[in-house]
Image (tube, rainbow, N blue to C red; front, side, top):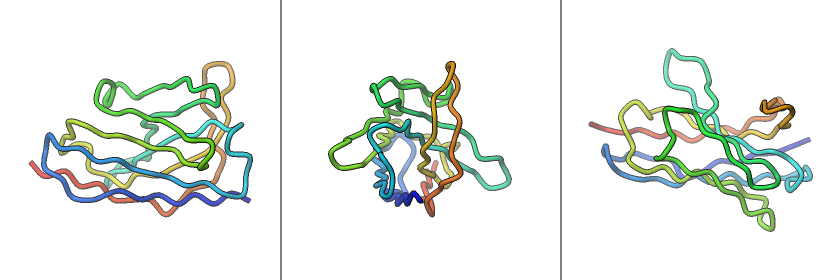
Length: 121
């Protein structure tokens, strides 16, 4: 069983920054690929970024150059630094754990409660 607890969301003006955190427990955090997803009202949940156990990262085109994912294995924590935020980044952001196989991320069905990010124009 895996528990994921996200924090760090809030209300910010366009152009601002936020840093999200996710603490994982109940699994071998350091051997798993970790990811952030987001879901805006009326839209499907989408993959924002993931980070492999070797530190390799991958980003959705919509956030490249603005968001940075990182991890601290000693703290079982994954972060998402979000800069130059846009109103279209408004969503509930979820942490996830999964596997990276053949250049594809496969999520496990473990999700936190999510943290709301709202970007005003």
